[in-house]
Image (cartoon, rainbow, N blue to C red; front, top):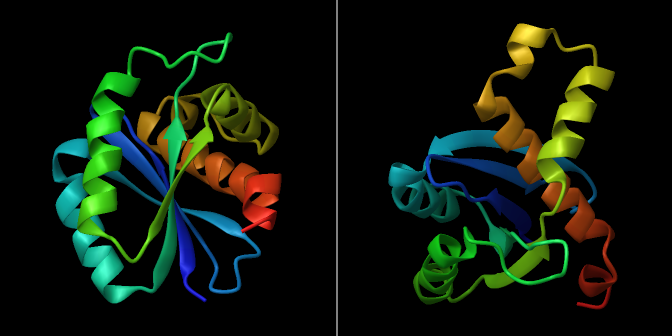
Length: 141
């Protein structure tokens, strides 16, 4: 059984999270400059066993795709073509940044450290991954 990799795709930075090999715990892995994301993913997936890639799907409150979906959709298609052995899933990412900020505050992180958007992106990816792992969709796979 391979790991699950989660991606919180952003125009500048992308947060990455990964499950443990037994798919029990989600952990933040890294924040990567989006310009170098494809190369980073190629290297990571060639080293590690990854079966599922989860990409955060940005939606509006009414469920319609948000404006950023236009940039994410071609990336999702690229993932499917480039890594055919991996199942690519989309998972709702609404409120992940808000939840990430709350987790940072609750964890006692200082105000200056909370301004580091790379940390927010990595925590958001972790929240997406944990939410996916807790979802009925995943449990029915």
